[in-house]
Length: 149
Image (cartoon, rainbow, N blue to C red; front, side):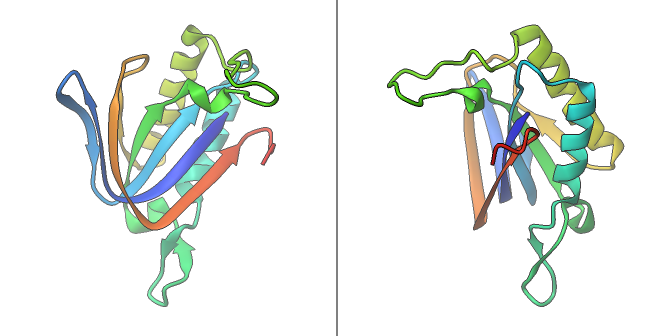
């Protein structure tokens, strides 16, 4: 599982001219599911994201988590995070999960965040989405369950 995690002051997803998910202060999470991912990975990644200390404390140090600041999460499925463009110009997506597997784990990840007490908004799985966000800092963290980076 891969995630691009951005600290935002606001973010939203628009599908066919309609806002389908919107948050204020929190994290925008672009989530890619790999073909070898399982439910345990979704839960573990949700815990990692919820406890990731990338919000500033009173001294201006990144010392607070999403849970600490009582922020929200906007979770957007993005299979292109598994695009492999090494040595070629057209990415291969062979490492990405099948749509059925990806949808299941995307939903499990979002539900695991909710169980931790995070308010979660989402995009629409497999839809063409317009994603808007205001990245604060800017702070962007890349996570990979296989620790590839």
